[in-house]
Image 1: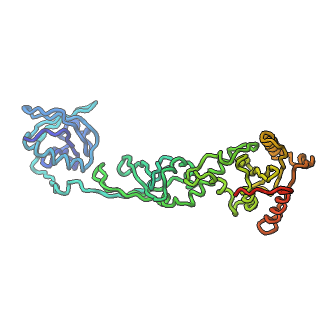
Image 2: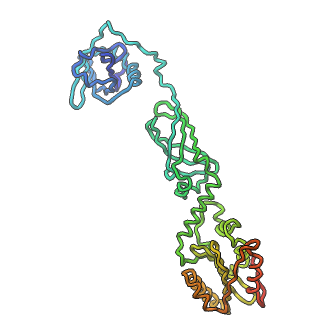
Image 3: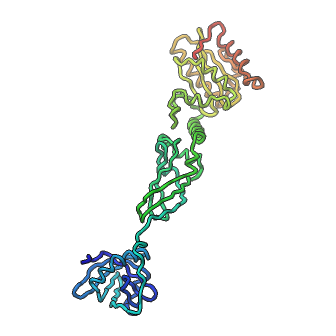
Length: 392
């Protein structure tokens, strides 16, 4: 005995209401037939066997494929039970179908093998906001909505260059890429069941070292833009970037001090080699960028101020205090003086003609932007009657 199915599809076609392949009735013989428009899905609520009445409740639209599947499931049940009346109810109306089988009408029964759902394959183009994605080692994982499948799908877009640490700077990727990244997804599925999928993205494929360099530049720019013009801090106080090399102690210095980025490349490198790190750390100002070095000779201590972006002279002060506390106090006083000079008080300070102060000018027309001439002059002031101590 065939079990009563849970649902059934009725279809209106060519002037008939069709239930199974051999069960149909002209629409004019159906009371309330407007309930059935093309294919409709109904829930079987009850079948009164003695009266042979089948009670249905409207459950929404259906399609041809669903009807074919329903016809396969219901046909044997109809043959065994032969209902003579079907009562259909919805919220407002009721339809009553007195079923008969006009012999003059026949419907072609489809090949059951053809009705078995076969895997389907399609390709879809999608766009995804990179901020809605997750970076993992070797891939980007995100969820996309497939219009063709009408559902959300999780996809992985591979690129061996990508690292999990990049996830913390997704906003910078968005700035560099300047658009949502494209995805081309090819899916093979049976209904909602995904059998296989392949994903590719030209945007994600383009992420390489050059993109990271642009992100570095944006990050560093933001770091310095975050400083007040009056602010002077130790170089190693900046937070590290996403890159592994950024965890190295001198990463920011090495990044900034490159020959193609500043005319004072050789000058800054030389001053860095003299930095008295036991007394103080290398300091940096806000924009316009500049650096403060503490340099020691055998008899004296010096504070040297060299610019990074602007064509300023090198400013040098000799710290003559003998005690450690005196030297530090004088060093802090000079930092305040530098802040004043940066606030357009340069001419005023120069006119005061301080004896412990000297400016050394750059001769940019010479080789290496005048480095050798500059070095000779600065050493004469630093060494005097003492020995210059080279740190590295």
